[in-house]
Length: 256
Image 1: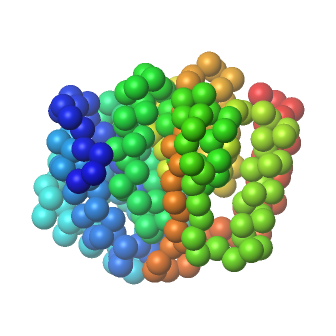
Image 2 (image 1 turned 90 degrees about the horizontal axis):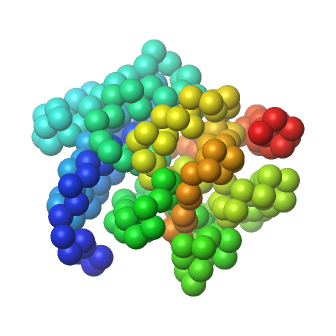
């Protein structure tokens, strides 16, 4: 596999996968994750936080635990749809790794980028590495990196995403090109600290994490990624999340 590590990494990596109706996607994303970690000789576990999916996602997760081992696939369900931010908080309490990776379960985020996250973290001893769909000119850690990309979005959604990040960057000046992305690597202790002071629980959660990380003095690097719109199922982003985001930017501007 291209980009394999030359020496073994003694750290353990915990992946938190929030799921809702991901029965079709889960077996493939788990297989891809397992392959990336095993080929790079990395210790790993996947914490599946399922919000009472009616499509049988939990049954699939239990079958995957039998295949890979209950120490590798850990199902920690919840009683209903309680929000993305609280899903990470819930999953975090079960992580046993040194670093935590958060990502989507619908192939929007490909596991092939994880080794790049880890290499950048190790090279600069970073607290957070975040995937960016845009240009990383603001990052001192990868000044010559090519921009990431987005596939599967129509022009309207691209404009909404660009506008959201432009608004947040202009108002908050976080020094990160993609505040709304949800493909990230965190040092476990750092994520626990930031989450303890984070107030948002929905779509604004990802943005607030980075803003508060910067305010607390943590180091953040970016890796360009290719974002692909979900293959199976429906997008969970709606108009309410867009309104919530705008309110969240204002709240952070006046409160952080």
